[in-house]
Length: 397
Image (cartoon, rainbow, N blue to C red; front, side, top):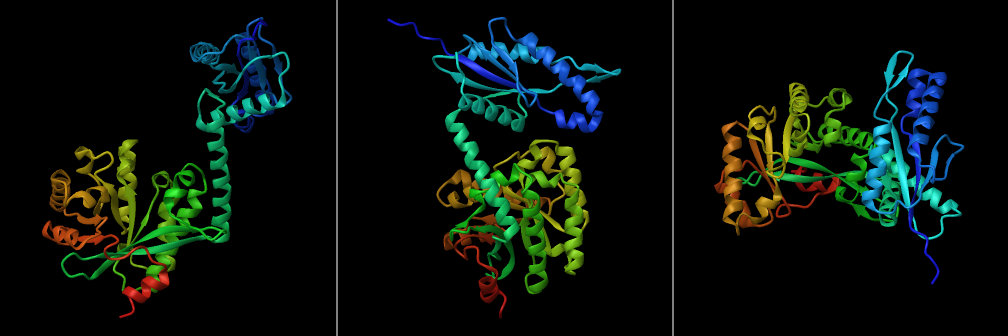
């Protein structure tokens, strides 16, 4: 019976921040750091492991006999240890950040084809993007990465070509049934005739730079619509968590309000509750700056995120939106009803307005009114409408 060759990992190692080093320290210093990178990388290689320096300055290694996850973890732990000490560059302690991409080879490793090398390169690029020491190529995961890249490219084109539109969903007073505001919701009209909601693309957008032009466009469009609709008391627009930390958001909001001569209090910026998970003190400061400009701040999906009363006490916001998962179930679930009631009472004790999302029946309207909720939003009143339909239905009277 012929002997089988054990599986092995093919690896490509690279300096993750070489271009940044060139910009910061200059070409000559970058060359010294790259030489140190090669020196340490060769220390990682065992005598039995074939290795080679690639033309792009990366280092290729075949880890013979390393075929299991525990073995790979031991190998990467050694790699991390070798590069943990900064390099003394002309008296300055300079770290050498490396990333590695692995692909598992089954069978004969005497010849390594371009397919295997490309897979290792893809894993390396993924490690750089995810800011991890290493990634292992996975066919299914790579398909997901490729699909995400295609979606991102299409979204960038859509943003540039005006394929995005804002739809408007009314907010209604529970007792009088009158219009008290609206929410602007983004829709993507694709070239093949589909209309996509944010659930299909917002996660990819928020992980990439395209979220900035998308959001600035949404704010500008919402404010310009307020200028056209003087009868609309207020309009809310979503501010994605990554952009709350963006220094440009204040100037974008200020400039839009000034250009279109819109009273700041008519614009509400909605942020999700989970923004408080990281850097809460900085977040509180950013929210306070936005609120001081005159716009209103709303916490969306309240009850599903951080929900820390310690931070809630100091939140510079004007409104809470109860997540629709509670509103939809409150008539059938006593626990959900208690949550809705508690949120409304808590908000009112802090002089905050409350919006109930997901109102779909007259019974839900009646219960919300009984609980003294301030505003209602949901399919019972209307689905999100294009601007012309919203105007005809709610503003032309």
